Image 1 (tube, one colour):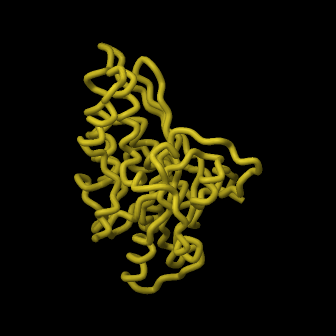
Image 2 (image 1 turned 135 degrees about the horizontal axis):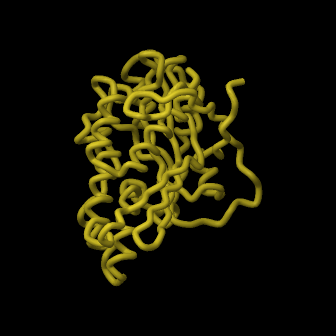
Length: 267
């Protein structure tokens, strides 16, 4: 199996299954959101001992970077991204520095050259893509933020997500009322690092979409982030293994390695 086999994709089969037995408007909305979860639904939650050892790994060769990116993460049930019982105790947090300027393609930028800064930059890229929910804007953002050797725009998971959501939501959107989609970072984690300029960064988004009514899911996404041209960008190599999409603030989210999002100052 290649790394690309882990890439989340919204398949037509899952769209048809989701539409069965429900009102078209509501289910189309939920289906369009739900396909963010496709490769995170391969079975019940199972532990992944490899993940715990990745935090402190320093890789020197491209092969090690591939190993860090491809290492499997916790597999969760599809329902894990739609709801969950809050944990009895608060989870540890990841202190994410804020953006300090507007970057190319209108994406917030200026994040620190730290692993947490890479997480912040990935979240800024993702939330800008989701808020626009436009194939043209997705191409523009990819062109500005993906380094040579990164997944091409036609194979980028966020392009697949946008296209599938638009396909699912289009027929159900009332005239003059296009879908409104908002993504908010809820948690993050650093899966692995290779010195100060390379990070496998992961972000867990809370995604709210409205087409006459609102549906909400949680969506986990990882990318290879590489420091280049004084900013974090999407680095070369295959798409990392699928991140677990778990409801933020639950015991399962903590088991999956997610740290609560805490934006900090520049200190």
